[in-house]
Amino acid sequence: GDNTMERKKHNYTKSQWQEIRQAWLFLAPAIIVVGIFFVLAVLFAFYLSFNDVNLFTNTFSFKGIENYVRIFTDQKARIALRNTATFALVVVPLQTIFALIIAYILSSRGIKGKKLFRMIYFLPTLTSSSALTIIFMFIFNIYGPVNDLFMNLGFYSEPINFLQEPAYALKVIMVMNIWSTVPYYMTIYLASLVDLPHSLYEAAEIDGATTVDKLRYITIPYLRPITTYVLLTGIIGTFQMFDQAYIFSNGSGGPNNSTLTLSLMIYQYAFGQMNTMGYAAALAIVLAIIIFTTSLLAEKLNKERG
Image 1: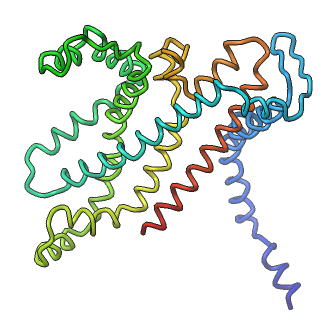
Image 2: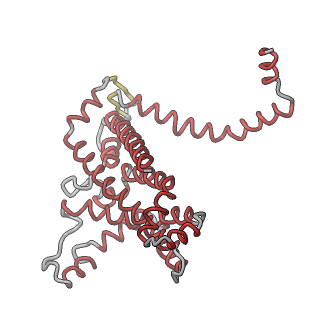
Image 3: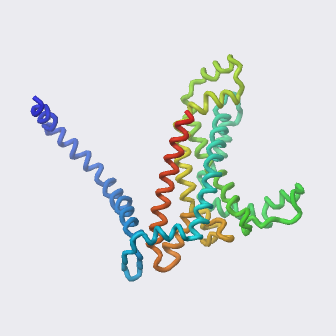
């Protein structure tokens, strides 16, 4: 009886075979693109990470795990990892909290000008990252508006060179990143809050709940799956931060390596120095493992809180 059941399962009709063929035909372009530009690229990078690579002569000499061992002894890699981790630890929680609070306020009833505010506030997300970086470099310039404002308010008498001071450079990029990503995540939260029944808030109000209580006990638990998504994309984005650090430091990671991120360091070794493509590939693999591990931890922590 079991054999006849098995045969029936695999005896597709002519139209079913046609559907299967069509499905594979539609999937083929995507499979080819993903296969070449993702799967093969990752496998090739993994292969490169075990070799000493000279792209000009197209020669590969096997080095084993030497490139990986070098990461742990490289002082520059340690600095880049510390900068990237600090950047992620500050930016990810802050952009998530701000996005959630603003979305909560904008989803409340009785607030005027919500649509206009949403439209204006979403503009940074539509602006290119390089343009935003240049604007922020002007704002935080030694003769820029931020220095003018703080000096007029009497916070300090001499202007601070935010762009060239190692203590401030990465913080400026953090401020810019939070400011430009909050609107995007706010929109995601807002889209989800549309489905939240307003009767829950009304019931909480009858029980004497304050605005903060409603946010804490209704909104945050309801948005937990969305928060997981926001945290994961935030972690991936911050750990891969490259363009802003590159433009800010003109590709050097300065001043004094204060804006050097892992992605920028990978770029420097891959395209800025001779014969270090293998080491850059090893760094890229390690970065991918770090992102994957951190994302899993964030997802687990967020689920446990629920």
